[in-house]
Amino acid sequence: MIILLIGYHKVNAQKIYTTEEGHIMMMTLVDDKPIKAESHKLALYLDYGSKVVNGALDLKTLSTDIPEVNSILQEQEDPLMLRFTGAIPSQDFLSKRHDPINFNWLVDVTYQGKSFKSQFKTTITHIEQGVSMSCLISARGQVLVSDSGLDSLIQSLDKTIQVQFAQLVLKLE
Image (cartoon, rainbow, N blue to C red):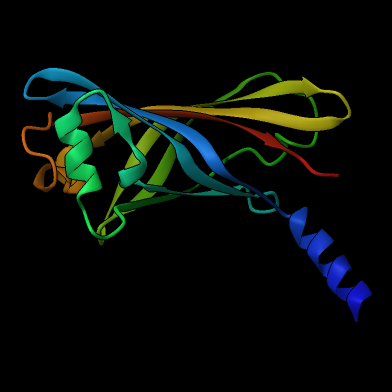
């Protein structure tokens, strides 16, 4: 029985790449002043088979240089979970060396029960890491504040939020 459980865990471990410490940065205006928010708690899950990326971020983990915004986020009782999912249109980016792959990535986003779509300019770059295959996924795009409902949480937000993240993913052999 123990051998079966170890074998089962090993097979599953190779199907999905997981990180709970991804980096994300958001920029917008609040009261016509620029604000940058960052978090190192972006959770990403890449299914190697389907090439679907699922992500989650509790907005309470964002840190800004504006104490009032930090307070608003921290004072919320419940998590402010933002989730997204999107399929990467390349089937072999983790199987062999490649030139950078550029594409427009359509992502389904859910925040506080509201769902909307957002498009990100995305690049997948092959990274040499010895014998293991790895790629850097870099994405940047805009989220409309009216789609997200964030304007009800933070007053005087600009109409758009610029979002960008980069994550190195490794293929486990």
